Length: 268
Image (cartoon, rainbow, N blue to C red; front, side):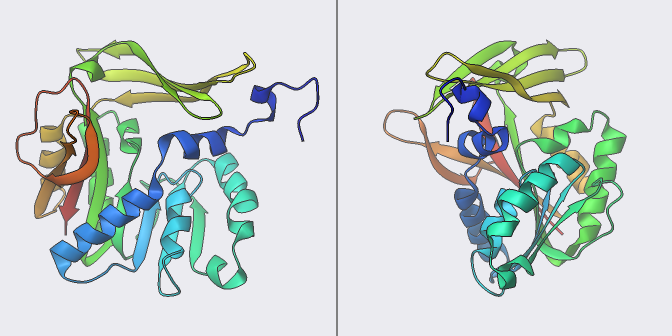
């Protein structure tokens, strides 16, 4: 309960805000399952979520039924503790046995053979060199079953190379995405997420990112070098007003949009 002298920022949970403002795990799981079904002619049951954060996607994965298993990997013990207390503890005993969250570095985590591996929310941008990113992709290849599929997302467009601030209104808060620094000779980019509230309070820099902005050709080349045999880009369609419609289909060229987000699949 909110005390009379507490601001909305003080009583808000940054991990809950992140899930509500950034993620749409139901859509992601539907996309992964439909794509895997189209590629392999069957459903996927074993899932690993790298850079899992709150393991929101893993929790939604096991919610599909008793035959679905998930593991979430992250090196941030604080967020995994939050997940244990706020997500996993609310699952029944049978469901808890079908999901594991593991504190580990994805570059050293032992392989766990799965049907689908995901690295969403551009989390692999933390690797700033080709050697490091290739090493991660090789480990990703090795953790998949013989017919497994690796799913990633990627953003780009001319606005991705700018220093800018974007605000998105939600019912109870304003989500603020800020690209505070971009270095065109290295493609290093510093970004942050902040939140404003109706009472005038704010949570500044709730999440900070020091990334390298990778391009689509670079990602494809490194995935193929890591051993993946097919790499496909999925571009979002548009509605009648020219806005994204949430439908992603294979595309080999893309369009010169100011800002875009795509899915990528890499097949073992």
